[in-house]
Amino acid sequence: MDTEVTVFAPASMGNVAVGYDVLGSALNCIGDRVTVRRLDEPVVRVGGITGCVTDLPTTPADNTATVALLDLMETRDLDFGFEVSLEKGIPLGSGLGGSAASAVGAVVAAAELLPMSLSNDELLPHALAGEAVASGAIHPDNVAPCLYGGLVLTREVDPPDVISIPVPDRIRCVLVRPDRMIETRDARACLPESLPLTDSVKQTAHLGAFVAGCYRNDLELIGRALRDLIVEPHRASLVPGFADVQSAAMEHGALGCSLSGAGPTVFAWCDGPVEAERIEEAMSTAFAAHDVPTEAWISTIPTAGARAVEPSPTDAAM
Image 1 (cartoon, rainbow, N blue to C red):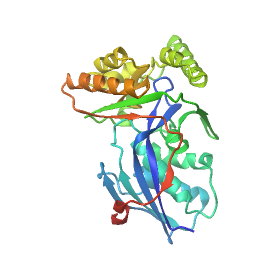
Image 2: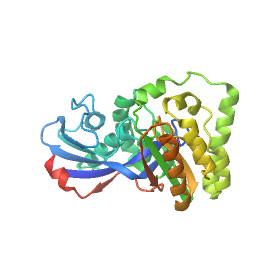
Image 3: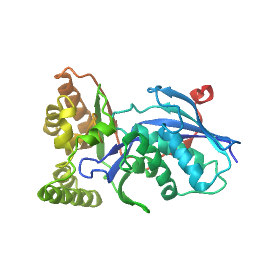
């Protein structure tokens, strides 16, 4: 049995505009590398943190990766422990699932070191427990796609009922991240506790049509449905220039454009790589008009979620 495993946990996009807290997709542009080493004593600790974020909590009760591992240890009544090292490739507070990737990567790596085999459905609750430390609530829209891969809808978390949704091959996801940070807790706090029934009905119709468009390979239907009437109106003001960035994406052929998760990253779905390049330039230019520097990626929707990989040279230095 291995004593150390490294896992690549991809970035993810929560909500995908139409499915607040239930819909999410994996991304193939960036991700975290999480290395877990088995310990003889039943403790969990942080071994090292490198990459684009290094000032994460190292106390086991405060780090998403270690909390996920503690939950795994307690639930499975393990008599051994884990040391976890993080190579962060996902900026925190970006709306790209950075905290979820740490938690998912940790439990997927730890599962490789167990005497028993655990399914994704069995690993999901442990990763959710870790993610809750960062967001203040249990929500699967980043954890589920990072774990399962692809575009997924989580109908229920207890017991897990995660449904994979096909994505047309031509779809590209443009992601433009302004040089800002939004804490998930703060973004959730600005949402209303109740919604008008008419808005709920309209959003439900959009979600149903979006899923149907994915199954039918109908990009026109996806474009008509890729709208957010619930979250975007309350969070858009957190992102400087959002309205102009969204308009620029739509004017250059995007099927839809909204916030990636809690933001501030803005995403656009479009038809093919050529359109994606054009839309990315338009969105970045719109941010620049508001004196906001950005970085951008173009991603497909990969079918693979978190998975074991070969250690990198930096892993050995942690």
